[in-house]
Length: 282
Image (cartoon, rainbow, N blue to C red; front, side, top):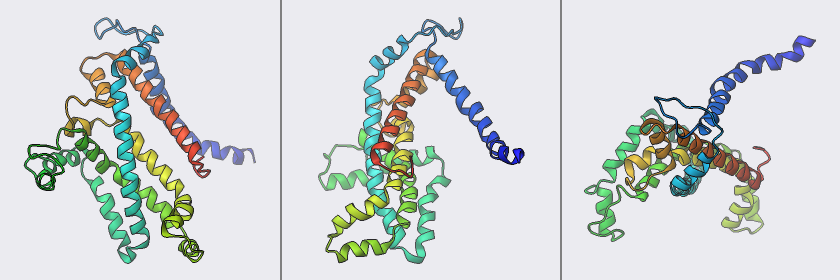
């Protein structure tokens, strides 16, 4: 009887060991790194001196880049939600027997390297490419204007790369909706917009929240799209962390910046989940 009560804990033990080794210990190491003496170096070594001023220094120095990362991730997340919801709704209710094929097409980009997919956008948005020429023909940009190496290109790359992460949870949630509820709303003289806002959207909120988190969190720390598609003047927080760790080897600042990013994402995630009222996720 006692062994039977302990069985769930034994089953959880491998996952618990994995989390301790590859999450908790690295996280504590990162926190320790953020409290290094900033005067240390690779040659002289680093020591934990509880130098909390590292956090104030990186906020002052890289605050603008952190703010830019937040806005770019937020815009890309909103675009992914709008585009992903429309596509997921279409797949769930309109594709019929082609549903599985369309889902495979959504997942297909994952079979290609993230770097290759992002680098391909440099060809799509090239100054002499058809996209720029079409925008110039429609007078949406100036005759000598460009899209590549601008925030627009970086956000477009974020939206493209993380769109499947939004579509799949949205599709899973939308597919569970009983169409008879939507028809009942119409029978009660609700307009299509009102039926969507009062019936469909509330029922699919778990999918919306999941899609938001799966899109916003990785987009917040992403720097590949900014590096390949954006301008060198538009640095994001991920670029700063990567540069501090590998190029300048300022481990104290890199650690402090990483901890701030993690804490900021955690606070925003908890606040968003609670405000969304999705008891299924809570």
